[in-house]
Image 1 (tube, one colour):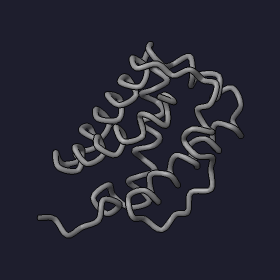
Image 2 (cartoon, rainbow, N blue to C red):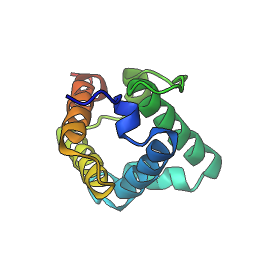
Image 3 (spheres, helix red, strand yellow):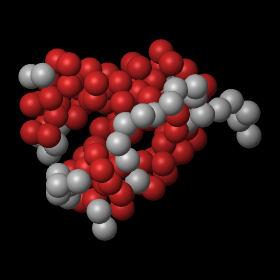
Length: 125
């Protein structure tokens, strides 16, 4: 059993920052969800704010020191009508980025579980 926190296993602040950058880039290249992300890149302030919220969310949710001050999952996704295919594409992107970053299988599975636990809040089921 690993005693390191999820935050530590993800590489701490710098690791999470690199993961978020690569996850967002993966989403922007993914034809299933890129239409939801590409417009954000046209507004650099909003784009950096989005990535900052993602970094804080991942840090706070993994036991790190950041405090997430963004909207709740239902509020952030209200009116977006995210469908199951898009949701699964995002999960796949996250898993591939974690693997490329050398994140171990146990940690990837833990992240998958966390991501999956948000499904109902994102899809508004």
